[in-house]
Amino acid sequence: MWGADVFIDAGALDPRETYRLLVGSVVPRPIAWVTSGITPGPVNLAPFSSFTWVSQYPAMLGFTVNRRESGVKDTLRNIERDGEYVVNIATASQLDQLHASSEGFPPDRSEADELGLRLVPSRLVRVPSLADAPISMECSYDRTIAFSATGGDFVVGTVVGWRIDDAVMRGRRIDTQLLDPIARLAGPTYARLGPMTTLDPLPGG
Image (cartoon, rainbow, N blue to C red; front, side, top):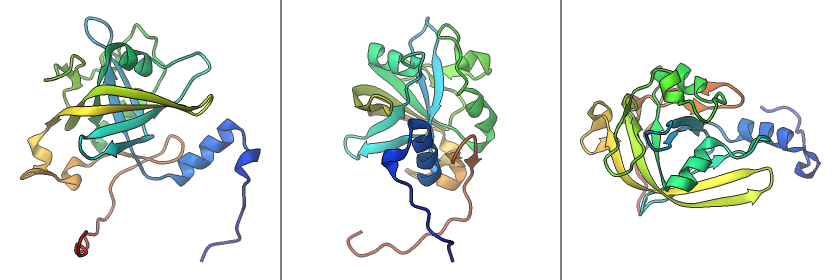
């Protein structure tokens, strides 16, 4: 049984208060660990938990790049300039490195280099992938959608190729338990998979 209701008028909130309610309400969230930038320049690495897919076929992904007072983040600048990027999926064993990569490193320093993460050439895009990520989705940039002056920019791209570690596959499917992905909760709090329940498919489902 829940306690008494608390009603909050969204119109009375400032951006920070709104953000806190969003990240506490929309949980758990998958994390896009995005590499951007083309060598020999620095390769940027940053995690984004406002992440989803927006089209089944062609496969298209979207994630929100929140704005900083200091200006546009390196990820967005790189993607719009180069037209390519990679969405990597981290496992629970990479949690510390994923969290550390959210720090605001200077544009001339690569988070992957600073954190000792290996990069490998991608197959269809010029941006490298994370070598130890079990899933890397190579993406071609499609568009950026700005919803508000403070709400961030929604970046959409088309997946042109997957690199998947065979260790997380069962046949042609990705096994979520074998993948052991990280989910984002409110604040600097993360979660792993708990008990999973598989139901019988519904007719026409």
